[in-house]
Image 1 (cartoon, helix red, strand yellow):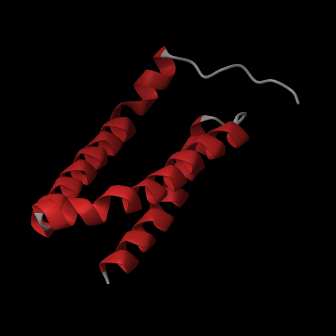
Image 2 (tube, one colour; image 1 turned 60 degrees about the vertical axis):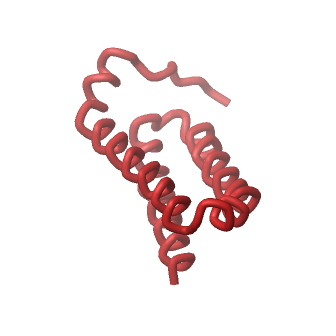
Length: 100
């Protein structure tokens, strides 16, 4: 059940993050989508290499609690970007449009 919830969250978060990236970089959609998908897939694959050993060594409460803390911090970062994003985009302009 937890894996299903995780998978659903990743799928919905990827859609939301990709839509936001395409909104703020309308002329660089391919690059934005590639970077987002690179982080999504590398994050999904890397968990298999340490999760089982970590949970067996420290216990499920410690390992999943630490991961929950990381997710909470990332959520707060998303909220900060939503609140302060327009100010930072006004201060730091996106790269110029280029033709392929």
